[in-house]
Every structure is written in C-alpha cells, then in structure tokens.
Length: 91
Image 1 (cartoon, one colour):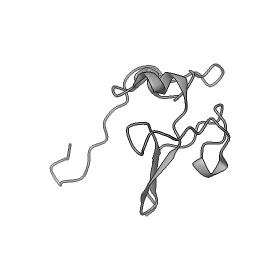
Image 2 (cartoon, one colour; image 1 turned 180 degrees about the vertical axis):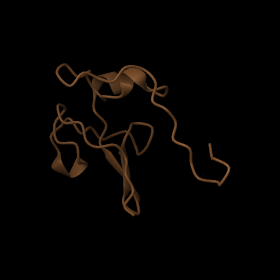
Image 3 (cartoon, helix red, strand yellow; image 1 turned 90 degrees about the horizontal axis):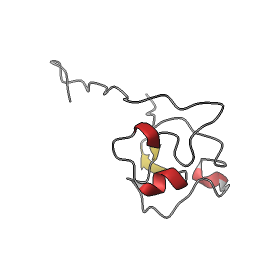
Image 4 (cartoon, one colour; image 1 turned 45 degrees about the vertical axis):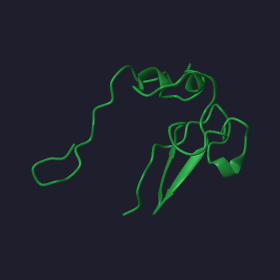
C-alpha cells in the first residue's frame, strides 16, 4: 500500500505483543502473524539475507532449512531465547 506521494504506508501489527518474560515458543511473532505456519510455533527461523543491508528471520523466505535456534552464530539468531531485530534497511 502506498500514500498519495507514492511512499510505502506501514501496516499496523495486529494481535498482542509477545511477553518478554514468557515469550512464545518458536518465532516470537507467530501469535500475531497472518502468515504463521505450524513450523513457526516450533522453531525460530534462520536469517535470510536480501542484499543491500536488508534481511529477515521468516520461514516464508529462504529455503526453510535453517533454524536459528541451533546456536549457529552465522544464522544471526543466536539461540531460541534471543529474538533479533526485525528486517531493516541501511540508509
């Protein structure tokens, strides 16, 4: 969705913000993600690079084989208790 100038309009996040004390299992966003799949409740997705400084942790992207909860530092997720920042773009 774009505004009158053509700039992207951010979509509001629906649902409840996850607890920091008792976070949900798997991906921290699965309780409020409209695209959540069963795997999202079980594992935290590995980091997928898009290039140009953009990346995400989501099973909708990449090959789906990665799991950041295995402690692989190259995946960018650390362990299952560490939720990385959402996708960003350097300016």
